[in-house]
Amino acid sequence: MSNQQRVFKNVLGGLKKMLPTAKQGHTVSLAMLITGIVLGKSAQLSKISNEVPWPAKNESIEKRLRRWVKNPNVAPEVYFIPFAQQLLAHLAASNTLVLALDGSTLGRRCMVLMVGVVYHQRMLPLAWVTYRGKKGHAPVHIHLEVLRQVLPLIPADADVILLGDGEYDNIAMLAWLAAETDWQVVVRTANNIQVCSEGEWLSLDELYLEPGDQLALPAVQFTQQAYGPVQVILWWDEHEKQPIYLVTNMALSAEACHWYEYRYRIETLFSDKKSRGFQLDKSHLSDPRRLARLLLATSLAYIWMIYLGIDNLLNGKRQLIDRTDRRDKSIFRLGLDWLTYLLKYDLLLPPLNFMPPPLPLSAI
Image (cartoon, rainbow, N blue to C red; front, side, top):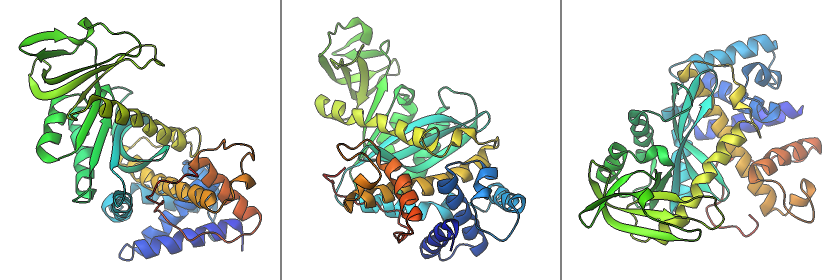
């Protein structure tokens, strides 16, 4: 059996167990996509098809994959949400769920807005909205659309913290979160924002800070729309060149600053899916709906690689694929390289799994 066949058989068997009611032909195509993505380290359909062990010409395989990403019946509700729900339940069992919201360019003249959940130094994808547009702030209705996708996935008793950069300090989103969820929220805001503290309106840039300072303005009205009360924090980390400004519903400013640092991990998700992994930025697709379906396949492939990276660490095999004196590789990179190692030496592949361990791991 070839390496391609081994991977495809492993992926298809795992998908069938998780998606027993899905159409078999669609599940087979999804297994083809995941196989081609991880072996070819590419999200281009032409390159994916080169790695698929199927008795047909590459052109025919590519056409089949293209039909899959075009098919409106291939919906996240069927092919991704079951995995996302189990993943969140798995992680929420022993941890606060830390979610982050961010956008990135994708395909040709398209954007994606994605919500992910923090897992150690990485972010695991949960939901996304793709749309035509250039780099810049997404419309508010896109923010709400992706959050509405995530909300039903969260276990009822889970503690949730949502993080976002300066794009997400809009009143409509903050008000929706306050009305529809009990999540704690920390988002970045601008230094020229107006707040009302103790009856006096002021701009945040009027307040003087030095490196190392942290100033909290509790129970203020935020912007001229007088939304609140919220806490606004001015924070100049001594290792940064300039201060940042946060708005939050958390009571403790130090806690809000601590959690906000996790936001940057969603950037590792995009870089892993792009330049460091699957080259998703080089996809030639220009239809947002098709890109959304391709994201479904790359997201499952990504979570699987995270699982394999954890498998490598927990089994004490890191030194086989990384430096012996220190750890250089991310969990994602370990997963990719561990799969390559297992195939090279004809070793048993772990069963397909999209559930990284929820407990803190000293090895990570």
